[in-house]
Image (tube, rainbow over all chains, first blue to last red; front, side, top):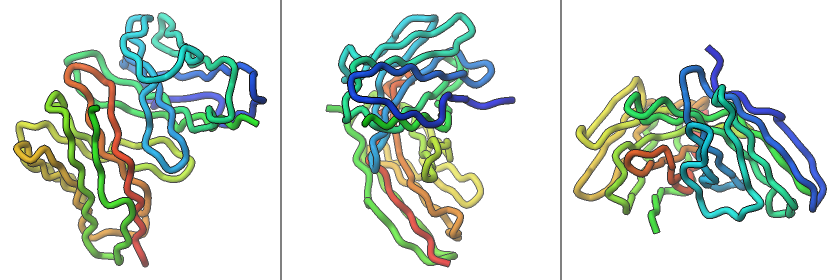
Length: 114
Length: 112
């Protein structure tokens, strides 16, 4: 059983560009959350998708958007990249409500904005 | 502001010793308390977790102690090994959601 998979693992973008990151959740999980982890800090919640809709959102600007597909996979899009967007982006998947509280993380995508 | 305060920021322990990391939370809506282990360049891995209806949970060398009245929980690593050297995060999700608030992390180094 594959865990949470993210692609790509590393990415270098230029300031002002747009980026799309991808996530496949763990089998049987229907909720996907995205986190941003700056160097030396804890992960910060960006938003969460359930039933193809954004269910919750953290304190991130509208430049950060996402999507969830019918197979529960998800994308994170960031527009107009800033140098400060450089971070490890983590995807976490969780089981259906009532089946547990766990969140399982992927290995992350390291985004560098130059 | 719903915060999770973690201490210490860094910890050095001799091989075979006990590592203790503490977390304090403010939001009483939290009803699940996990600890994550993260190695450099990797995503956080769920290590052990506890629900507030128990005061202690042990899995192998790892134990969570939970004090609901004090709104604190801690991770104890017994017989610490060099392979335990990593960054540890406590977290709390808001009740009924998977929106996790993470602590600031503790960098553990176990000396051989």
